[in-house]
Image 1 (tube, helix red, strand yellow):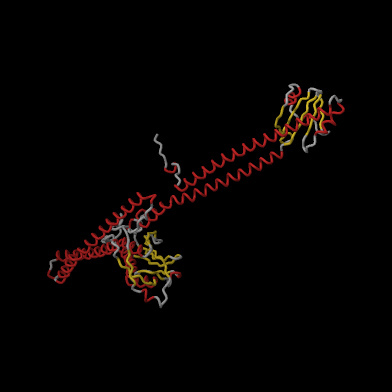
Image 2: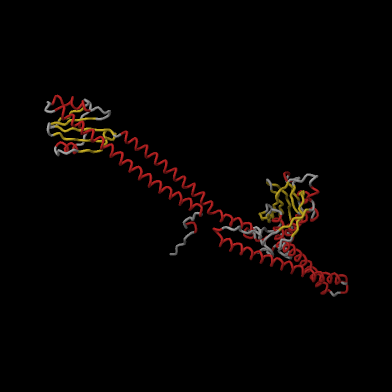
Length: 485
């Protein structure tokens, strides 16, 4: 059995900035945790040692006082003796003698002292100390045998204040560790920003170049000098090649116009003597005229595209009332095509070259006529700051996987053979895309509610210029430099 590893099963790779920040966070957390733990345990060890040493000395003093006070006293004086030395608040003192406990409080007995501890002191004759939990509170327990008078002295000293101090110390160190980790994250973020900033410049430059700004270059950066040099050389080579290809296409197109003009004149001459031609000659003349007209249109479109690719296209930007332009263009093309202008689209203006905007709409109408049985609806609408011109056709529609490719040059679709007359050059929609891109807009394909295809052109809406300013803007020429599609 063959197992297939899906793409989503691969481990996720995080970006460079995220990895740098994670490294700083991990390093800061590790260092702060190690320092905090070492500090806590060293301080705890020292404080506990000092406290136990102090309590042990005090217990020895108290045991000596009991021994001195009792001497060879009777059992009746043991309770008074243990009470006389228990002067510290919270300290419990016990005297053990012959299986009986005597304490400084009638409500407290020595039964809470661990039996092994008592046995080690009473029967082992050894001084013993131990940290224990009694009644939920930490205690330091000390036992001292006094064999001279047959007793053992025990003392419980509270460690609650020491525990409280250690808790405060732990909280402070934890807070410092968290703050240090946060500081590490901040430092990592700042350093990673500085680290990836040159890469961000590369991304921005690559995006601009992909959008057609072939004169874009990366600034010098000592950290990325090899990359900068290679990148700029690559773009310069690409720019030179694209400009060379564009000039070649433009030159070829220009050169084709002269023989094409001669052929056109010859065809017109033959048409003037049409009555002298035989029937087969007449048919051949008609076919030749159609092909010459088609070839002439294709050359004209190629020349315009080549001019835009070479950055030599001149666009005369003015303020254009889009609703009036659409109404006049559609009416001039075919007054029987239904036209729908949304209320919010009435009176909207766009900034652009009026001739080229008209050409965009004419190309959309020609595309519908050539490939899809003609346009059945032209609509103008507005969506926020964008105006949309949609042309619905009567064809079978365009498959989703072809809706981007139809804007490629010379692409007429896999279904072109069954979508009416295919005499088009395949450059109409490519020229539409170029013109719209030069105006800051774009084009895409949707499914028409009528069942065919809907080609949508989008343009940014602009506020109309004031009358006093408008004449200064009319006729202003702007050179459009665009890279390859």
